[in-house]
Image (tube, rainbow, N blue to C red):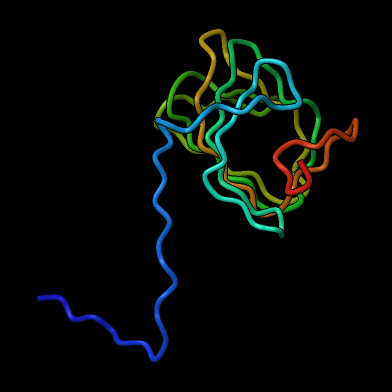
Length: 128
């Protein structure tokens, strides 16, 4: 039998989402849509991203660690490719262009702070 810790104040509630029934949102870039699973004012966010075949995330810098888990398809950059069931993380300061393979990609992305895009676009950011 599990014991429950009793806090002096009520515990903040969990937030349950049903991503399969959430609408896809268009992004600033052609062929890329997203579902925001979590976000906060600091720019931390968890996104489900759908990239059409060949869709590109243009040159950007990660201002904090970025974590990506590939669910379907292929997610590629100059350093390599990530296939279904694979994971890649990039440190703060990493700059790259990323794109979907010919089959497209469905990825789970976790960002601790907003990316900075070379052309100034707002994407994966709290200011979107």
